[in-house]
Amino acid sequence: MYYLSTRNKQLQFTPAQAIAQGLSREGGLFVPQQIPTLPEGALEELKDLNYQQRAAYVMGVYLDGFSQEELLSYAEKAYSDDKFDAPEVAPVRKLDENTYCLELWHGPTCAFKDMALQMLPHLLSASLKKNEETRTACILVATSGDTGKGALEGFKDVDQTRIMVFYPKDGVSEIQELQMRTQEGSNVGVCSVVGNFDDAQTGVKRLFSDEQLRETLNERGYFFSSANSINWGRVLPQIVYYISAYVDLVKQGAVSMGDAVNICVPTGNFGNILAAYYAKLMGLPIGKLICASNSNNVLTQFLTTGIYDRNRPFYNTVSPSMDILISSNLERLLYAMSGEDAELVSDYMNQLNTVGRYEVNDELKEKISACFAAGYTDEAQTKDTIRAHWEKHGYLMDTHTAVGVHVREQYRAATGDSTVTIVASTASPFKFCDTVLESIGETDLPAGIALLDRLSEVTHVPTPAPLEKLKNKRPRFDLCVEKEQLSDVVLDFLN
Ligand SMILES: *Cc1c(COP(=O)(O)O)cnc(C)c1O
Image 1 (tube, rainbow, N blue to C red):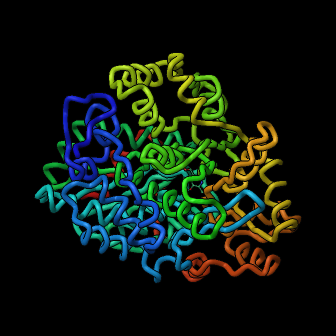
Image 2 (tube, rainbow, N blue to C red):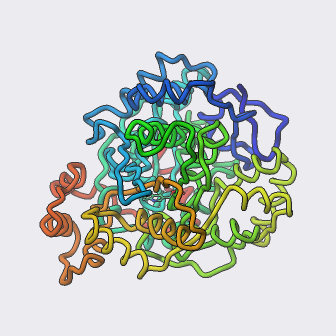
């Protein structure tokens, strides 16, 4: 199976080329030529496998040129029990009668990004070998917090790679910042950018399209690659856990094989929910996909009206990993739903670039509303949700998960649809201690790392080991620059 660009279907790429390159030259995203369907009986078969085997099976359907043995060995390394503190890797926990949290944060950085970023380095290293690439991949990351740490942890000391992470100075939590600034490894760099996530992302996109920089680095033996959620190697491992969660629900007797479930995803760059959409196209019985946003509700508007408009105020919220106004992976959805119309997609993306707005045609609107529901929460609702579920069910959730849980409740109240729903739980509550503590009624909060102990004392939930270890670490990185200066930082880093 070949991969094409969402903006130009003429060029074909092997999976290894698509993964190594990350982003197509003309700005499009790589997509498989067609989305494969699961063979008859596949879900029955997957039900009796462990997570690592499920991952190898599902990824194998998309990756010609990668053997099952090879993929299984990557999955065993990526999701080993010294990296994940839950034997199921991505366990499904019952929240109430019809709601289940799919906990995606049991990995080394306590956020769902680990699910993909522990796998991507294996896929990328293998791809470089398959492509007979001799240069070193320089991975550039713009992060709203969790991707940066996830990518650093995944790529640290991986051969033939260097990784440079840019995060918005005013857009990450204290714990997130500390996690990045203390990163270990000989091939890593970390730098903050004045502004918000979109500033950091715009700066990094500019680096990717800077031909002169590309040439200079080529002479030094480097090429750019991306670990952002636009890389196909990020999307693919995320498809796995929706399929895995479904067969786990069947195993637990919560649904019968073939019953539809809804999936609700707290969304930012549209990568996670896109993976659920692909799982649906593959034949996983999914009813509605519910897209949950915070006050940066550009996607709520888009999915309910067909109008994408980034000309709106930007809010820094208590769910910072979703503070995004340009959801890059939406491009892949438009491509799939428009019948793979690369010209139409290019046109919309062009409008987004130039005037910051586009409106999709009626046919697309109809297809979108048949498949998606959408909603958003304000800060008070997010905090109330954390408190209510802690008090009622003794279930402690982070701010992003709370956005998902609340939008799922709104959706049920508005539609009466009580289909069993999987809510993607995207971070450990310990990554956002201050808001979680406030939500459950704590006052006089300590600063910084002492928050971890307070949350653990009050809730009797143990602090995840990787965060506990932060206490003994010193920051290694303290560079902060304007978004126009990123190329200097990169040239310095790769000197
Ligand atoms: C990245 C992130 C999200 C948003 O996921 P997307 O794939 O960008 O939509 C939600 N919650 C947390 C905790 C995250 O780190």
